[in-house]
Length: 251
Image 1 (cartoon, rainbow, N blue to C red):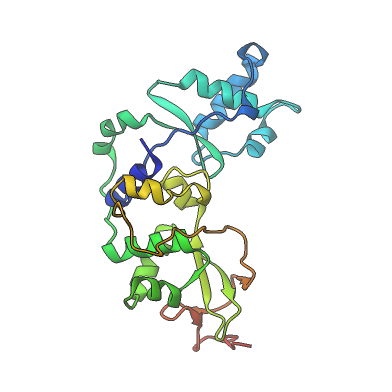
Image 2: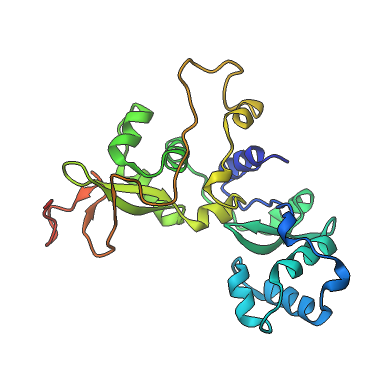
């Protein structure tokens, strides 16, 4: 199942998706070189964790000097083809239901509110164009953006205020969160589907309009972007400073 198909299904249903990440060459190690006690400890930590765990987090709970990458690789081999698999999301690791068995659990999940078309379009623009301001989102969509759309995506936890652009009014810039990566089974934003994958999945015409390009989002601050200080008041309706809060001067 391609990344773009998983992304499309998750957007349509706004429910969790499952993905499998390949084992990297660096992490491969012979099974005989893995200490079984360390393997069991790693397995227990991952099963008990409520959120994905990075290798650094695992290393803090394992004996000093343990090769965490080798343990992860061995666990992936052991769980390959089973009911649960070890996958990499947001550059961390988590046990998830095998993709072909996800239908068994859908009835157990509470029904979640589906996103509106405006919210889906806004989320896609933020994901691909981040860092992006409210005005830029409206320019790309060609319509005004309601405050409720941004509110909804922030309440879900899939987008965040990441900085301020060095332009008049210093509007805030938006980007995606780690929760977004986890929800859609992406290692990082560089793994968003490209143009070829979007065309293959039917999102784009076989011959797209001239000049159409898929932008390359960035997780780091852009050259014209300043970091966002959490205590700065923001008017989400405009993306600029809140005129009714102290300290909202543009200077």
